[in-house]
Length: 231
Image (cartoon, rainbow, N blue to C red):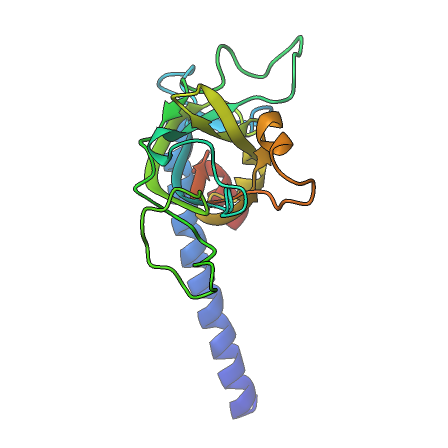
């Protein structure tokens, strides 16, 4: 055996030993997770073995800001201090005879505080950049508010975010994000185009761009599945 072949063989054996150690550690973690939870394929979510009715789905969400809700040409009719975000997880698949879970898919909706900052995001009329002032045009609404939604009982539900005027009791815009698209369980930064309400649409031109919601979110639903895939 030549020295070069011997070195190559030694490297491959070292790599095999390291891989075996990693695999052994993963199997230990998988066994520990398997004692605590059971993955239900129909829901795409793990449930607790100690409390079989307890789903382990968890959504963490930070609503960062909303842009282009209003402008200088078409300012908001609402006062910024009356605006709030309503967050919930809902099953949008319609009525079905057989659901893969019992009861509500998630807890009741959560309501934010009014935006921390609000200004015109389009600059002054002469085109120069504007300072962060409290101009109630609705070009930029900064919320920077966090939410935790648990337990979530299925990955086939959607994260629904509504922007509402609490004084006028009207919905201004809404958007939904399927949880199945977040099943990778990593933190995602998303820019979501919101659908305006009929009243808001009627007060603006047809080609008016939609408001954009900026969020940071993560959907955790199983410790078993990532370990199983890695093994």
